[in-house]
Length: 92
Image (cartoon, rainbow, N blue to C red; front, side, top):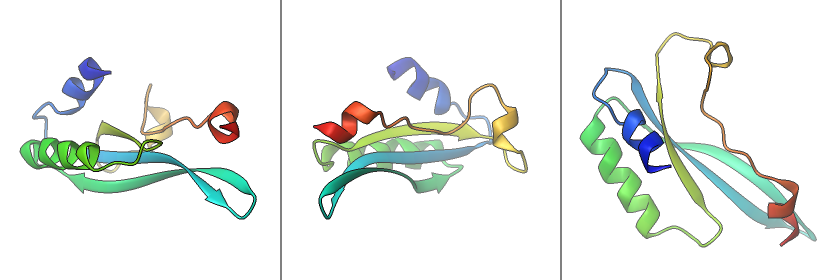
């Protein structure tokens, strides 16, 4: 994962997206939520925010950084911003 984060933080002029995956309790069930929580082109700012978020995160939160071109339909790329929340994540 560290190699992927390092690759996403290259100075390449692309947007840096920080996404958050979490499992939340709603009434009597759990749901998976994926959110974009920060967007910038500034690599230093993305690193700083990613570190801040990981220090203060809840135990079930997961953050990931993606590098994205602008004006692009992202599903056409080989890999695009997404976080998987499995059925097992919702059962615990």
